Image 1 (cartoon, helix red, strand yellow):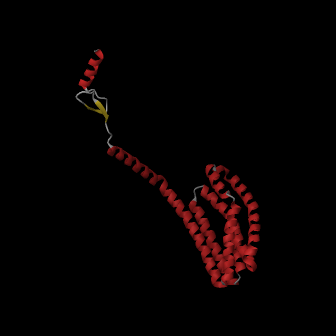
Image 2 (cartoon, rainbow, N blue to C red):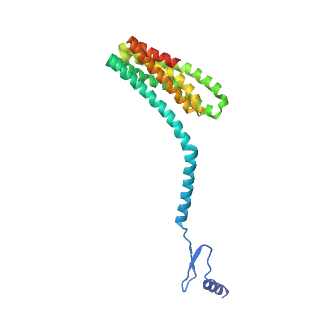
Image 3 (cartoon, rainbow, N blue to C red):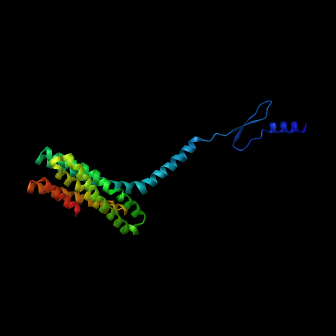
Length: 239
């Protein structure tokens, strides 16, 4: 009797928990239904947080990243355009055979240059950015590694160039050797990139490619010898 009386008293009062709505029935206790949150309020809060995040990223990250990427992108475009310009001049001045030999040299040289790098440039940028005080030590180690890998890549390039280019193999070797030697300059640019000085790195690349295309074309005009022009370009990369 006492239990039934308590049960009837709870039903009559229709007690509700916080955040719940009662639904009373004539012969059963009240049913508690949880309150449904307002999704519009949640969406507004979420949008406010996203807007604040976009604003913070736009101010603090997007601007510098865009500028740095723009400088490096411009340097790569100029490098590609100078190579295209030299190939156009060589094809116009010496014909398809010489053009093919030089193009094969550039293709093989690109592969050999990547092989001679063996990831040294990326490691130099990463470790140099983490600890700038170690940069001289890291650069010295990278130069030693490059002095070991560059001759090996040169030998492999020569072995592949002879059957690929035939009698024009010397031109192919000179064209590819220039790109292998250029990897030494990439170490210098890696130092600038590690120090977040992309503008200096891009300016260095622009100057190097401008001098290279000028030296090769002037040599072609003066001597009419494609080998001498490629040798002049190789000298520019070496210096």
